[in-house]
Length: 597
Image 1 (cartoon, rainbow, N blue to C red):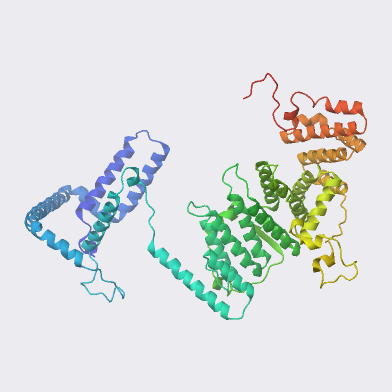
Image 2: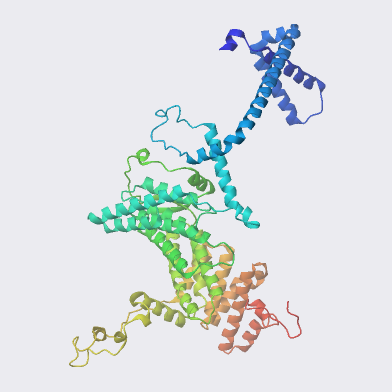
């Protein structure tokens, strides 16, 4: 190199000398600076001192004879100025000559450019000749032409529409999507010709509908990569939440062959995505999505019950960040795509079963609040309450098996709050109707002949003369009555042992209310007096205070039905005031002369 042969340039040495002197003056000036600036200045001083060690001889020569270095710098600056002036004069002359000839040749050049066509490059860069290399002028011309097209397209718009951003359709992406759809159709046709697993065809049909690249020979690593792609698109503005739900549902269906350890995390991601579709606080989950979410949760709990040694653990914030950032390994990095179904150990997933079942209960309550109670839709919606209770029972069994008694107590309280206010006669009738519907379907959907009189007992009647459904008679089912009093008592005992203070208080209030509802006044009064709830109820939250007021009213009505007028008066005298609706959370009481807000 030139630096090793002739040495460093003199203007560079002169610059190092000036920089060293400037920093020395800054250090010796002792100006008041902050601690950060002082440390930065000292660090810069050390760095320059370390860098100048390699040029110590040149720097010492520059300090001894500064005239030689100054003359060279001035000579170089004068020569550069002369060259710049010459180049400017040449450019002016060229521009004048080109302006004279440019006017005559402008129309010809435009016509030639319109006739030219862009050559398509078939080979690589090595196969191109020198004439075919793209130049800067051609790229500039293409940029100018594209800008002219944009301006011409925008001249037709006026006012606010001229400045709004328009959605430009990328034709290359559309072509790629069409090619992928064609490949998927070809693979579907091949799979139909071959004799294979019918579930495999269903998976391929689902992948074709959803636009996912789901292969027949999918491995766990491929499934993880597909899940990672879907999760990366989740939460973006351009992503459709419904489409993400469909893709997660397809992945959950395919993951069944890999065992519960792969299926459960995808199901939990799907459930979390369902709750994320609710943007506003006033929105509630529609019935179809609610039932779909309930079936997903039931599937998760069923898989955990089938594998007693399998445990579900919630992901922490660090685990979620790693899941979003890390790309899953390929098959060759995991061992050739071989897998073994995991039936024990711990599986990490998003969310918690207790949280999800409580959210599901909240959405059910919000839907009942929004639906008109005088319609048939409200009656049909009430039938879904038993499905929440049965799901909570299964989740409680899992938590007890996993020795997670805190979560089990929360789910047990949810069951108590759905059972305590029903009389046994009503609860058994509802249980009978739901069991019949689960076995035979809705009553109005049965064949009319099956509801009629049994004709098998009449002589001469057979299948040739009457409908076969009438020969079997009306459908019936044997139902074992459930003692809801014992069920609530067992749940409350579990809560008294493992629940929090709030859970114990609410369980006690629910049990007292259930006793009073069935006219067991002595049991309800004894529980109330032994618990001393009336002493500390003012320190509880608003919902618990409302539940306490309702319990007091129920106990007072129970005493009235039993003929205990004095006890009924003692119970109802504090609640029966001008604010009775507010105390029972049944509305706002407005007096005759009070102004309405």
